[in-house]
Image (tube, rainbow, N blue to C red):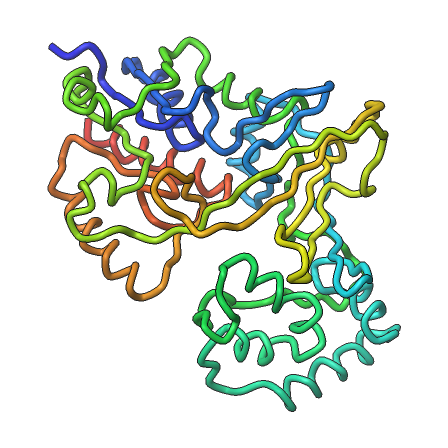
Length: 369
């Protein structure tokens, strides 16, 4: 008889929710992670009394009342509203694109005036059949918004010219004809007081966990300790790259401590211009309305992914989707393994979607048992 019912590979949100729910159902779980901490990419590191979002900004937002109730079991959320600003050609603009942005661009004061400018630019520069990201953006918002707030930022983010990126990367661009700087439309939004570790610690309380454990370095032995494996890592790596390597974008973070109370006055400032290699600067204290005498910022640099770097964003172009399809089919033949999360499913998930996906998987399994 094996020691555990489930071995969860990866202590991020998907694995932590899964372990929590299965433990409630009297299943014995072991959670492992190759990093030296739990929490995956939502992990927060505390310095100078400030919770640093070590792997980039994480703002919880959802319209799903049940998911909101679920996370509130483990943390008290503040009322942080994400209202980033964007620096372009020496000027600051509000995001998302709204009446404040349009006034900053053109001096327009009414929705009618702003809409007239956008519609005329779409008519002049847009196309009914966009073949790349640039054409898609021009067809959605016109030339000024595209060139001021999209083009260079996106090219830095993906490491390619906008004309070489597929149109589907931008399915829609939110344009608001109101003076509303709330980046998300979701009803529920906030940051857990004390950082995201409070949620992870709550989910994994009483569950056996081990950090600095590389699944692939100890694969044969680890596969023997549990009846089933919940795998949240890269799906191509699990199958030893049988059908080829999937592509990702990576990120590099530079954290800086500054002996001042306030560095930029906002949690998130985007840097559009190509002269800046980073895409944005985070000032972490503003996520929790901190009053500390010092501040910590993070510069976020997009990078080409290769072995040894963290994989953050799947590149869901047709070539990669064809490769992933083969791995997806292969996953159905491995009955003792459950694949879940951004890397194992090769798709972008927000936090609320990860939680919903994990809860759904637990329900499906529970029905079969």
